[in-house]
Image (cartoon, rainbow, N blue to C red; front, side, top):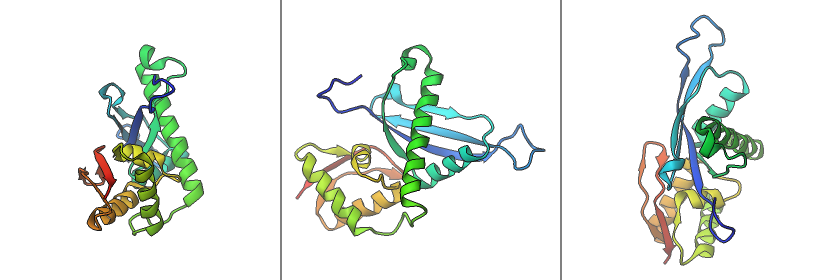
Length: 187
């Protein structure tokens, strides 16, 4: 666990795939199966979790998280599950991420997440400036923004700021996933 003066350990959680569960071919609606991936700068906190059959609100949350790209949560281990029951700890981290997604989508609804948002770009600048001279990872940046933007919205804002040379840094992204690389300081 981080000390009070240290920044919390962050975990980025995303839904890698969501498809019909192979073991329930005759049920309607057919239960879904998700592959949920967590990445962190600390490899021990990264994991890949394949769910069982999902229905109802759980599928809805997985779809929202998949559309959102990822959500960033803080490492927590209130019940010491990380050391004693890793699967239950992973489940608790996924539940925490799903609660965060539910709150985000209650606040922002189904807004277009790929359009350029000048207000978000300005907020990114302010957040980078307040952290200066420390460089932020994309996960730290995303975690610090309220409400948390989707990956597409954040990527669009970062690209615009990089093109306008208002920030510097490097981002690696493949498909819809943003890897946690440094976002540099203001010029």
